[in-house]
Image (cartoon, rainbow, N blue to C red; front, side, top):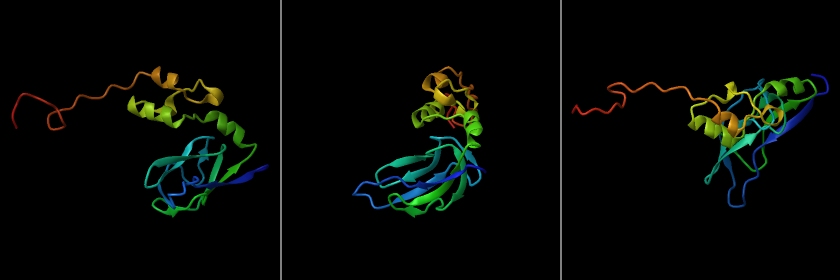
Length: 151
């Protein structure tokens, strides 16, 4: 990739009372294209679960720390390659903030299938609210259905 720049992805700065965090779930794999602001990995401390977003659009070149590993404040956990060639990919990638992804999850809406109307194609709350969620099938007997019968 010409004009590529390598960025180190670091664990979040932890508070004085928190000495380490655990990497929970990687949402991307090495070689995946990522959008700026897209959550790469969930990070858990004894107090909170944080999302670690991509600082720029690019390709996740290498994951240095795996799921379940402990990390300290500001420790390098992955490497991201960014550059001019990523601009086209960034425009094609739909991005949503954590609160919008949560809303989409609650409404059973796939954010990946929503055309974003926000800056740079970002999916907004309004975009998610404008999508009619897929109807959920009614539970059948034995799957949580409620009836007047005694079992």
